[in-house]
Image 1: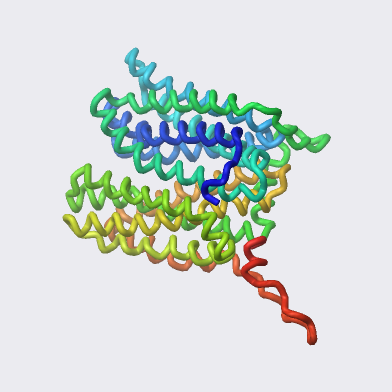
Image 2: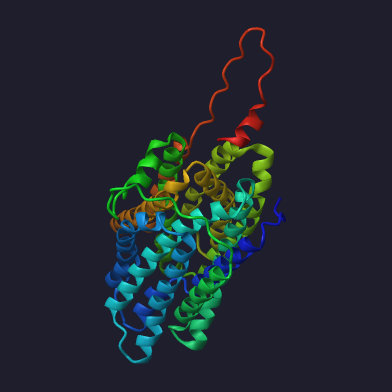
Length: 422
């Protein structure tokens, strides 16, 4: 299943995604780094750039959802790539002329975050139209494996590039990657299916909340959505806490800190490539319940981190377990979400999902930071690890098979029925 041919058009889409993902991997954390190294920003300004920028971008993306919904998706994807290219390219240009300021970095962060949400909404809808329904899981697993490999390779190379070529080198590389992605999307070719027609008599901003209505109105998607908000938010909230714990309190060298997060991402290649085979063997409901539970139970292990090599191996082992299960779970979730969403609601639903997830990450990260300030980073990690343990209770439970009527023959196999519809 993993080697199934998905056609030339998907090949261009995948190549465009790969170029963009690796460019973003190289530029991971580049704007806060520039704020520190070039503008000599303090902790408060860096926190604003890291949290407020993406949060404002999510707000900007809200009115974009209907506009993306009722337009052809490929031009939207090209346009958002070009917007991100221009925004990121403005940073090295301003730096070269000595005009770079904090406000510009904040505006770039807002534009990139909003354009990313709009791009993801359009690309999800386009993917559903581009490949056959039975190929959606394979396609999503390939995109997911590319994402994890870019995270594993990009940041270490980006750090080396900054050391060799200066603080804005990776931002320029990221800008070029968006331009190459736009060119790849334009090369897909073929006539795109017409977008859904906008309801007559409604304004351009009508239907802003339709995506959330669909997510919260579908029992399965509601359970998966709420579970994902908490799990993703709590996992990401540990990142700044670990930075303080490992680098400041336990005195890990920077290369060990980078290794602790880069090495486990290689497990994402394993999990994402296994997703089609695991679903084919055990069924989608089993993946949601079992893998969805396994991605949440390991986080408490970060409390056990100690100085030296044992501590480094502990972080790598915990992060590896989380990444393998997340990378297996995510393409299954993405496929299920596409299948359960009508075409005329896809862009708004995916936008609502992204905005909710981004808001949850920002809010929980801020709360974790306040808790760590009031206590210690290790205490905050322990609280997060405990809070994430009951999140699997939100996952949808498999439907009970009705009892057979007296004299009736045996019903369909439970696994076979579950693999078709969770």
